[in-house]
Image (cartoon, rainbow, N blue to C red):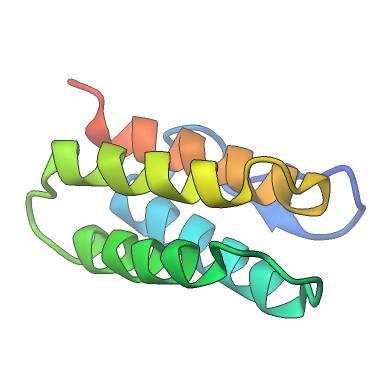
Length: 102
């Protein structure tokens, strides 16, 4: 586990937990997004795709193209929000850990 730059909250290290790490990363970003109260035009898209990523994490063999597509949509929706950048980077690393060929 790695400490994030805000002190205290643990984040999964790249590839540390595979699908479980993906679920942890999704949960973290969902939690941080829920506490971010400024209007976001694509918040619903990000929330829907985070749900898709969570469902993919539960699959025995996740669809790597679907993982990457959902990540792209989440990044497009939230990528400009600096308050969510650390959680978004952890999500990207978790998707890559699951979707990369071993």
